[in-house]
Amino acid sequence: MPTTTPPAALSGLPLSVADMRGLARLGFDASLGVTDLVEQMHRTVGKRAAPLGAVVTGRTRGVTGWVYGAVRGTTRLAARRLTVRRPVPPARRTSDLPGT
Image (cartoon, rainbow, N blue to C red; front, side, top):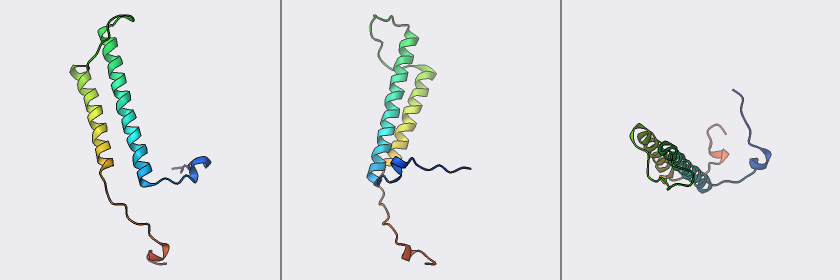
């Protein structure tokens, strides 16, 4: 399996654990936003709303609503697991490694 290397512009980018958590949180929030947007579009198409008619609001129902709810729930669970604060182990010196 070939390994990939980061683009040259990102290879020297110093990211802390907090930066990585923030980027992950941003990704989870974006995923939830897109899920809500797609569900609303799905509901609007399903209700056959006229282009200039009343706004269709609310969530989808039935199996469709269950699937969108499952996607949101899974995304929130993954985000919660990631944002649990765990202590970051200190960096190890090469002299601390066995055999050095």
